[in-house]
Length: 314
Picture 1 (cartoon, rainbow, N blue to C red):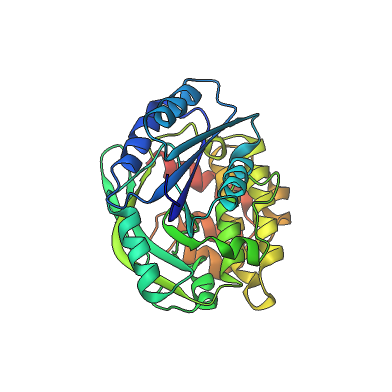
Picture 2 (picture 1 turned 120 degrees about the vertical axis):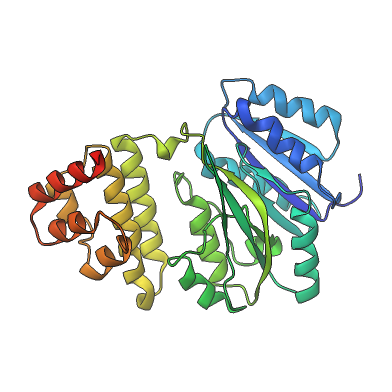
């Protein structure tokens, strides 16, 4: 096989119902110069066998099987393998999602044309009954300004971002062990602290499947909340001082995840990263839940919960 231009890293865990669609969309790429690294992270369904099937069909697909270490560990395994090849760029794809046929072609073309170390594209969010196109134009090629936008609508995923692979080696960027929520956000943040230029392709080339509610961190458990909380704390530690206040929005969203599922205590709500009023107003802009948010901010936690459950039933 010729030297691949792009390494595609696919972390796989119990994705049997969706995996073929993902891998078929990679096979359909108009840009053929890639390697797909499939990391089977201890799947207990048929995902591992599907990965082997595609590797047997096409030499551009490589499979590695490992004990379950979480999505962050699977991404890091894929990155280590990619570092041993001569590819120029890397990108990620999640096994329950799929990509447009010009995903690689358009991103690589933009990277080569602009000499950018990161190229961002739009994406679709797919729900049960509709799809939504999310524009990801950073309106700048400055990495620091792009980093600020991660807290104002720019998605932190690596699936809609082609990255110059040498950046990971040059800046010693890895996926942090034990971090399995926002693990890609954290890596994007680290990259934007070092790289020199970002570019943008104004097309939705990636498709997120939001109908799969079996995702580990979407499962409403206290453990999932603390996983989210730990990731939030890691991000806060990475941010420069002038951006540390941006973490309040993410922390508030995590607290509401626990609230919606009935295991947020008053002590946790007020004790963990107290939420400024401006964050509440921003979060509930044009939302019927604004009354709940303001009541909680004022300290009327019990009344706020009553209001929240009333609004949820309506």
